[in-house]
Length: 270
Ligand SMILES: [Zn+2]
Image: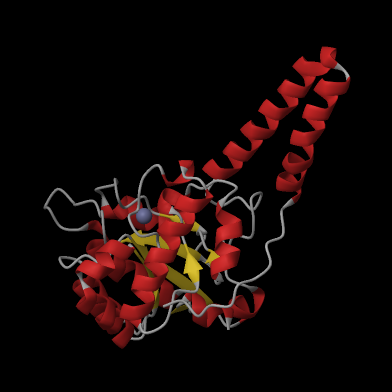
């Protein structure tokens, strides 16, 4: 189920330059064969620039990318917690209880095939007032190497699956590990999705010390921040506790002490 209205894809200046450069380089080679080293060099540089832009999760060089909440939301003193890679039966219910205890709302970027495996958890996330967003169907680590058709399949499958289970389709997409390529934005536009990355992340999939994760997330904590945590693929402390469950209580306390209100991305953009 995806009733999201599609939007028009507008290439960024970097994409437009690459689209002009390729036929331009070919035309230069055909009309002036000695120019081939220059033509080839400029094509290689453009590919390197596109690749670098895709490896930088917070970049806007390949298309729109939400890294902070908009001014209206900042004026309301809002902050967004985003929780990736679930649902995870051993973690998500405890995360929901902690959020409830603090009256916090969050956006869960769920993996489509995990949503299909744990439909009750998706229903529970929604029932508690949170939003379920699209984090691809399989969460492949080489997602940024996919062509347009495979990217579309990955997103559309998760969109349909989550849409049915959550009762409404996701509004936002986050790429696995935040890595992407120039084919992603046209697919997002077609599906009516918006790319969302983050302001700060705690690296809680590999950092086993909760205090380190907390320090990264709360550095310069301010209205408009989008924070990234993980309920799936979450690291464990030396006592084998999931890092997110150790980080959330002091993080939610710090957010409250700063006078901020955790809302979903959808609420923030209303
Ligand atoms: Zn992920």
